[in-house]
Length: 632
Image (cartoon, rainbow, N blue to C red; front, side, top):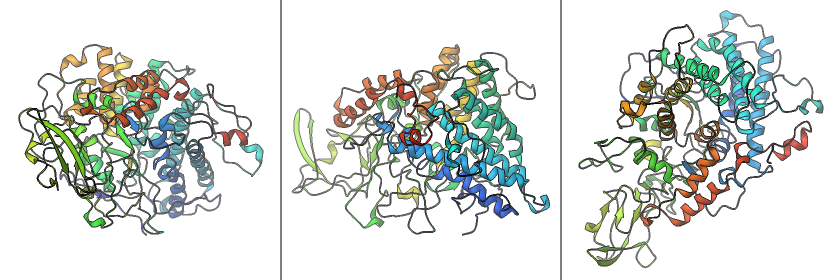
């Protein structure tokens, strides 16, 4: 296959317009060629693809790191109560848990590939006239990725080996490297990225699969905020205020570039990822892990399970897949009641309304407070179906109308229609597709629309596999083409606001010019897109602003593998997880006791040692210079 070219469409200003996206090269070499190989641009791209390759592995953004390790927070929980595995998303993992080793191994493979690529390209002699961008641009990408992989390691494990040299021989001593203190690794990461950030200003393409200058600037803001956090030791030569200043300045560089905007449609940002499309107009999704196939053939391979493991549950024994409304999904992750409250109650203004449509597309009567992000992330339905017939089961529902007890059976073909969450005769959707009663025993007129039904057990719907979005019908295919965001512009706006608020003093950009965007403007921009109002009173004092920004990050970035590390750097991880364990509604209308009890147990498992992952047992057996993390 040939590389897809993405052309600039500066005059294209159609809402929601998107271009087909793929990884920047359709080859992912597992062995990085050595010195003497890099003689032309095609070979430079080939080797660089191998450095990027770790991102799109199942061990990293395809599943293990993204979902099991990073997505278990106070807003999201793993819902498979039948699982007996030792899992990071249940917080019952141990140092020997295979997933933890696979993530560690893949990150260091990415670092190894980067080191070998950098060494080979630095030694290469290529006529600059034969390159579309400079050799320094390729080296800058590899150096950035090497630093980013180290950041993920230090963020998740704390003290880790810093590997910045390519091994010159298969000498066993090469693996005997002690851990470098976390704060030193993080400082090396920002120093490395700051060294090469300006080399990334040469444009390469319009897809989010390759790192750009603004991506590097946004990631610098993320790392500096983490460095300023409560769990990182003091860094020589940098105060906390220095780090907040740096985070604010780098985030502002992205904002001031005017290369990125919020897409007016929150859901469209994720529909684009579901469809493997890139938006060249707003460019809100700045950097994505891309998955280029669905494993239907050897040349259409992928390692991503986004949408399959996290998404709207969709299962059926019906193998006529052309009738399915949503491709197969386990739907293993739910939004918590804490997340529901963030959308529905916290930081809302009196009279705050969103007039629009509900989950079925119907007009909302009167005034109903709904955050657009809640409609997308925690929809009132999945695709389990009320299937069968009365003799074989169906879905029997008992309810009371005017003190009269009634009983009926609902039928709905599984995975062919949106199945609303329900309790008694109350349903989370007003219009229910394909629904019928049995032998007149159920009066459809009795159905009551209640948008809050089963709000504590709803599937995380951000990357749903509905066929109207995925644009393909598939069998029980566990691997998908759905991309995962690593950095979005909305995140940059909120990081900017947080850093400026925490610095709490006069700030200028890198050129000494005053910022032209305020904290209030940055936060309001995100909230306005969500359809909720913001008042000046919500920016009355540093602590008030701090709480608003933290809540807004939860609402905006839920399920994007960021919340856990936010809680850790804020120093509230254990407390917030334990609070989620007790924040369980008592009304049966809001919960399924099995799921919510399981979620509570998971949250109760969390202890101080879970701030960091254990060093994998297999790694300790090989690298004797390492010692296990404290508390493990």
